Image (cartoon, rainbow, N blue to C red):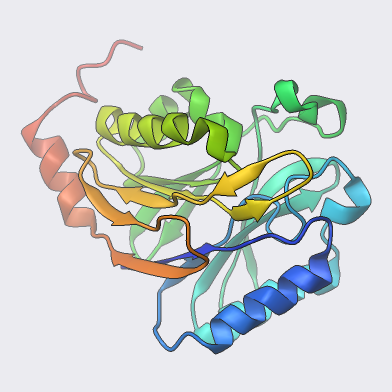
Length: 245
């Protein structure tokens, strides 16, 4: 399966300008992918202003058009009904999954503006199962432990600031190793009024090996992942089976 990571400069609280930026990137990109993944609050940046972050019908249709044109599944972040979410939409424009962020970033006041989700979400992509997570969720290992046995990987979308980039990369790699799963981390680049974002989107394999490093450039970056690698690692090392619940 070919993953396309969309590392973009989210235009601060401006959904239309961000859409134009994404369209420009896609129009000048001639590769393909089975799945495209955009960052947390992809169209607005990580804002506490609900009118800027809340996605309407046209916003979902925009990502649906990308899915249809590229004949691919598209995952993207945005706010709906007071929850910070990750959505997936297929090439027919059908919304497949909605995950609501469980752990809200109280240090940045997120818990004062949005509500926490309570459930995990698992998405099937071409025979591989992925559990979904958003940014701050990454700091809580139980969120991933509880789903590892039934998944081949995890997709984490984020607005993770450059000042804590070492935490981002270290936690993603550690979660991949301890859960023997692919970890796909999709972060943004650029700036908002309080933070700078270095991107550093990455794909780690189920033994912690690096499949893809996106650096700090804007664009679409691709790599292949396969279920067999996950099965092989878990069959060789029984780490998940040896866990105490």
